[in-house]
Length: 93
Image 1: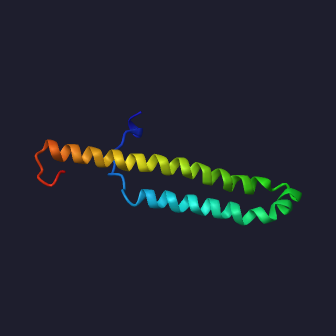
Image 2: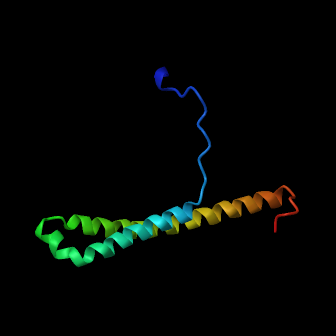
Image 3: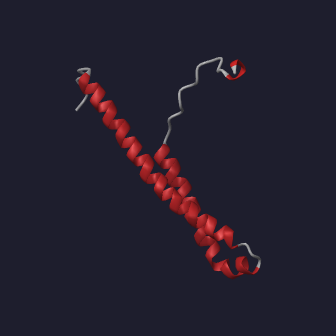
């Protein structure tokens, strides 16, 4: 089991515009869904309807992801504000 032990410390997670990234991906999935709708019969004739419904599912799962990351961002901000207030930071309001 020793060969599976980490030899170095894990790096810090990358933080970025998470809400914007999830929003952009959700919009792309919904756009792809809407663009494929006029070709619904073409997809149906070739047994490729899963393409259309995959885009719809991606859009709806993106909405769930958007709800999640917005809540996560709010929780991180509340935690940072509480930590700053506890430490006596005058910038905390």
